Length: 549
Image (cartoon, rainbow, N blue to C red; front, top):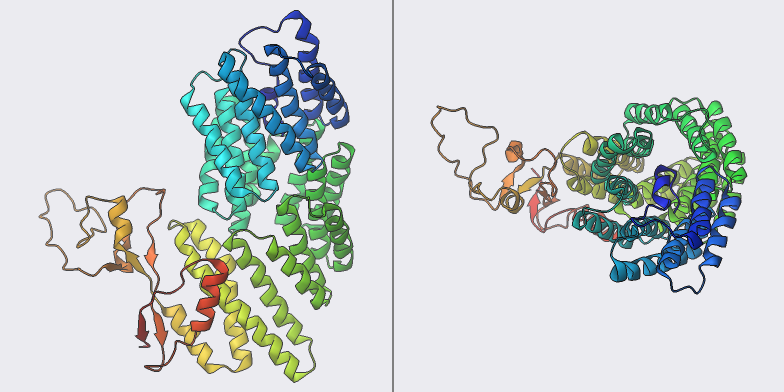
């Protein structure tokens, strides 16, 4: 992919000067890359295609080196146009040529730089093609190459690219804290390479903050990204700047202004043939229509967009479009269509976090639908359907907290998803008059987790499992006798011990036991526990059963 954050990486930076016969091809590649970065997609594509044509069939090292670079740059054109299959084919051909050249001549013509760029581009395309695991593995390969060869040209710029795409990938699959760490690594590198590159990690941090309900931080990060744009920037940069301004307006609930800015950004993206950016801007405009009380127009925009994306569009774009469509159809009282849209979004959700978000919206829609249903029987059925969706989401999101290290990100994420699911479950159980379920939900809310001793041993092998010191003992104070705790799982109160600031593997709490109100009876939430564990791939409760206290 041609990334405006790394335009220099796509020029010729070989260690050996280009010989006279191949200088025109070198210039075609460089000028084509420049054209793409300033938004002249068709012009750039024509020059790159000419460079590829001139190297066709040549066995000369220089020709193959130039061909690999031009193929990689041309793949960005198809990525911009959302033609992911062709983009991937071109990247794969470039990588194959680059790998062969490294075997033959080493890095004398900057071939490893081409390989790293190719791996990053391939990771981006794989991510958009719903192949997240492969995409992350590709970035791992790129980082290994960078770490094992300290003579790669523009190494810090390459590292910046890798950390930036990893932040995006991890954000997509719901690993918010890992995504934040990658974005901050990219930010640190940007200050060394080119401070204007910081706009990209700032936007990633804004998205993380937004998805974990820290709107103040999200706005601040967007403003920081905007400050790095200049009036004389190229078309791509200007388009992104408009999008950023629109998002800032949305954060501050200036929806009319946001809608207008998104529409301007979409027009600019269309002029530059930036299909993926146009998609994002049109979706933003639809969200603004929804917030300003115009769901009919939002539905029109979203359905047209979904039709254009088809089955080949980026999974993230398709999922978001269907999710917004569900909101818009629900807003205008078309609940059957809303449910269809949410189901489509769920099919495109790859992480448990995203499935929880979509299912919570479905449950809320069922509750709203029930309020418009005159038939008592159907109304009760829809309330029950909403409850059957809300409880598994509540149980799953509480369990998913264990994937986060303790801190504000975890708590904000919980408040954004768990708290609304809990409120909805209580409200629906109350409306249904289901005292047994209400009691079980109260018991669930009161349940406490226990800290797994194995996790402590794994991270702190010098700490015996029989004793934990929550705080350091001042020097000169006689050691306290060990606390006679011999249980396999330690109480949550022991979680204040000292550890790394940001552990790579967070300390996990063991799942709480199943609770029964009547000895010998099945736990009331048993059915929903099974659904939550199956649907969201998380352990909600241990096999231990205890009586309610």
